[in-house]
Image (cartoon, rainbow over all chains, first blue to last red; front, top):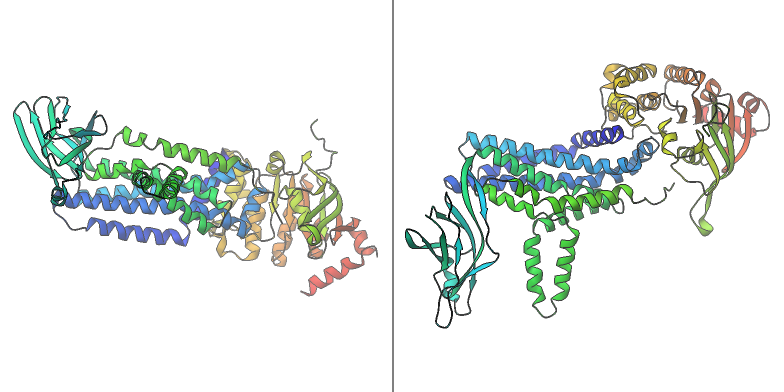
Length: 369
Length: 249
């Protein structure tokens, strides 16, 4: 264990003192300042600033994690690998140390950056007001259909509770609804104990429904457009915005850190540059996996699209599942991150664990001259 | 059965190590045998390409023998417990340039199992032993001269008080004062029971430290025995010529 700690410290020191570390920090600082200066009004500006800052931190953390690819090739070239191999350090510790150091630095960069962003945002009035979000169980996807000749209405009822609630919606246009699609909004009927009202809501996104009394029924108002109900939640007490920004940064860092073992493993068989770029791409694939899987499903429906779908699904299968990064959107929208947000990292952590085991225990080629 | 003091610390028997395949096969070590007792210093002498580095790498477990055997500290070369009791000074010591001198020695102390409570004292002793001043030890190895880097690498090798020291050109790049300082340290370690295996081109280093030598040429043992006899006799006509070439620069 002492060997592993010493080797991780060595890797950390080398990375922090590398010229690329300075360049990365300067670039990150510029990106954070730019994101805090994004135009907009009040809440919208604060949300955009936080989202932009977290995106910049994600890029920086991903680069740090992918940098784990640099250690082994550099050590081989400089002879440090042989020097360390002649010590009593266990082989798995020597192999895992660069990945662990890069993972730790990725988390550190993202969390420290988020802390800085939270402090600046608080001081400049750009903090995003944040509340605890309690998810409401919705059978997914629930499709709301307006009544029409020959077709019964389909509605959803959400249970009663305290506090305002929000729903996430997406449209599903019927064949004769091109003019409705062009309008870019949906009409949603909300009924509670006080009566019914119709909301004009963005065609795709989240809408605040207010504080209804008793159970609330949601219905589509336009027979040309069905409404897919993707999620719903009640908002609870307020939480400090700085805490949420810090947690979001930590989550971003942890997600990106899951790529570090992959970078180190790839570097065993290829150059540092190739391994680093491949890792960055796989992290991008992992972060956009839902959209890519949706594209694969679409490609399946096209003639000759099966190969494209297989490629997309193969890339997604290789990449760590970073769907947890969707929590960045939650943070920007003022929803407090919870243990569930971090639990969504578990597949990526498991991926990193398997890759780290391959890295540590699969024998290397026989050493050459 | 645990090894006794009488057992060789290093024993290499009929070592063959080849590189490449088919017609391009190179026999870097071709039937090398040697042994090193506890508290003994043995010099590996020979020109470039003679097989010194290959033999050292096999002893350190960095290369596997193609045939033959190498045993170190009672077990096959490369075993973890043997590596933990071996200190190694590579020829080029600026291999971790971003690290400060003291950090490097602390790192090796931790890796080689020096207890945390003793680490600071042992690091101080090792740095003192190689004559590296405290302010110099706070600078990155990248800023060191070749001689300073060699001293700090030597400190890193001895900080764990190893049973075996393997040194590749240990005094190359050192000034005469530094050379004598390092040799004095190595003599002290040898006299305290540490076995020393070194490769060198420098006659003064070999004579100042080693009792015996093995002369290698083209991967084979050309001569072996007491160093004074090898230098005096005509069994190794190339040896004196080698030293003369190196001394002329």
